[in-house]
Image 1 (cartoon, rainbow, N blue to C red):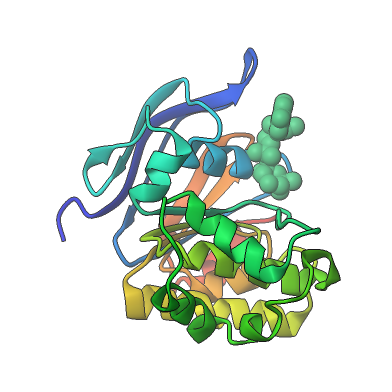
Image 2: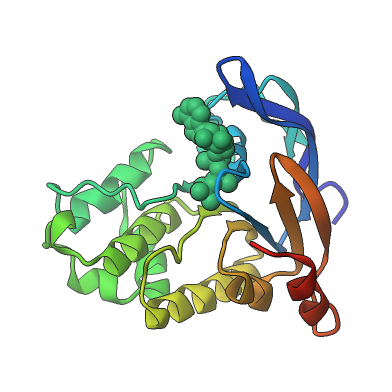
Length: 236
Ligand SMILES: Nc1ncnc2c1ncn2[C@@H]1O[C@H](COP(=O)(O)OP(=O)(O)OP(=O)(O)O)[C@@H](O)[C@H]1O
Ligand SMILES: [Mg+2]
């Protein structure tokens, strides 16, 4: 569909006087999954924060379904369909799992109904069994699932995920991979996955970007024929 999806152009962003990246371009069509890879400090998280609006951009454009988001606040982007899972989980340790889930909905001014929960429990059935536990009583991998589930409760159309597999066990990595594929294929969700685990990312992705020192130095489609070659081209 023409104009549907995420289109970033000329994006420039940084902290204080120093820019992390300049003039970035990226395009993810609706219902596609893009993997953004690159070494520590390359600027991947800064890009996601800039897309969500939790940090300001200096220049450039962030079009979502053809509508400019650049000057919109994070809550407005959330209402436009952006869902952001920051690096490092970010759940509230002293609140219950149920309370952690509800906080996600406040960003969109929605009162949680059964239909909201149903979608979360469909993708992550285990969350239903944890509702009365404290956030801090979950393992790291379980906290990652909760952080992901909390975003699904908001019914996003665009998912921005920052290293969801960092430090978690292989079975949960596989589970997250299956959920991402289902969200893309069943819900036509547009997904930008920041990931250092190259094999995992390339298994899922329709397209890839590789960032070095704030520049997107490589990009292209991912498929059976290109996967092996891309693995050889990028080194993290
Ligand atoms: N709050 C901050 N203030 C100042 N500089 C920062 C801040 N956060 C990150 N940086 C710097 O910006 C650059 C890009 O950092 P960023 O977190 O975007 O990298 P990354 O690609 O996500 O790395 P990683 O793979 O380690 O998560 C780094 O040089 C980092 O030191
Ligand atoms: Mg990061």
